Image (tube, rainbow, N blue to C red):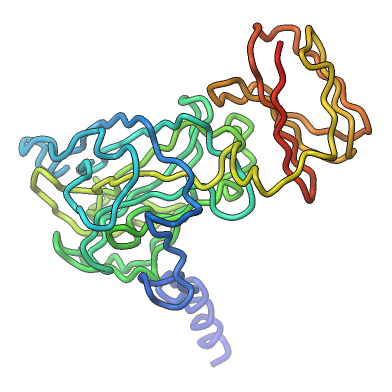
Length: 325
């Protein structure tokens, strides 16, 4: 009898369907969705490059999806026009870029929008980020939707079984992502994210085609969607945190950067525990270091003449100082 209960307990702990649930649909308690008009969103993707996926990956002769234009995924998403999107198709990929890189600050850093017309017909996508456009790191998605039966092409999903997958919420409400959840890859600078990759989830539970989550579980979502607008419909990607976030909330009193203009080196005086970032005038992060002493000296002789931005983050302050070479 003890052995029986031990096995039962083991099955209970491991069953994906019995795992802790996630936040639910828009309007429910604890929902994490962010509206497209939320004032926290300070910028939007400025370019989008899409590699279309198939209408039905199991029948490739049916062709690729074709709905929408790449520009439909740039600029602000909206909560009224579900037609201003670009469809990715089965396994299709969109790579979005930004005028100013996304930075890892407190809370959510960016948000991805889809065009679902209700809270339960959800077409999902995996999300990755990169600082150089070559090396990407993927957010650890979870799908606890049962896989014993295929969700049909117009079927429904329970959002409380989904986490870190774009497309979790209805039109006008985006799925937020926190860059601190993908820290640790030395090839991706989470304080200078220039690329967001959105990858359509192939909803098929057939292991020949299926997409899987971070635990290796098959992601079951509406399939097949064998038409020109099949798959994830990308409506936009908004930035919450970049190098200009909340600059009005801070006073520049703690640090002194000199000489300014400079020739080859600058010195930063002030608090002895701060992160230091240096950006060029188009928002590219050129240097990231930590200030651990009262004075930090930086060799910038290799930089061409121009205007640069020094961002300093201490425990309680954020300061931005323009310097000229």
